[in-house]
Image (cartoon, rainbow, N blue to C red):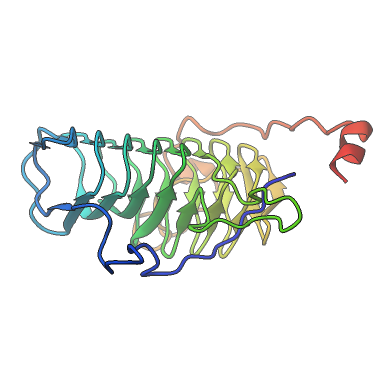
Length: 268
């Protein structure tokens, strides 16, 4: 049965039912610096210590947070709830600092590339072996969520089988994720694409297009975008591509192969 992806997240539902306390002890780290403990949890970072806006939680074992020395950290909260989790954050050059709240579950990973910026805090969650991959030079607006899982299981009553499995999310390079856009389990976005305001991405989106809606659909192909703000960076009129420095991501949209009629029938 195909997976169902929903946004159904509640707070306070992760406590031990008998004692009312969390089932595991918690290491709460508030300074970004080198760290390791007896359970095999570690932070790998050789940049200057960051003491503001940092909250790292280790509840399990053998979890790793790796932050590039050149990373700019605005706000960073990472919760390793289980075991064998991995989170990596790349460096920043001339882009704003990362602002993220990240949950990493059992055998899961959140991998953030270089020069990834957020206007406001971006929420990310990956559990049950899922991976969130974010390429380089990705620009998030405000109110964005990347959820490779729904937070709680949903089952088919007749079969008892899970209908909302965790699945990977992949974002290519130089992608602009617009205001309040959300990417759910199974979403993939190609290089150079723009995700429109309030969109919900649940599947594949090709490169160099504008995708919008819920669920998101391609509304324009063969586009490129650049970072300079319309009112903050001269020139204050930008009528064509000669008014900006072009990134390497000016490409035509590659058409995805259409499924055969038999495959479409089998999906019904």
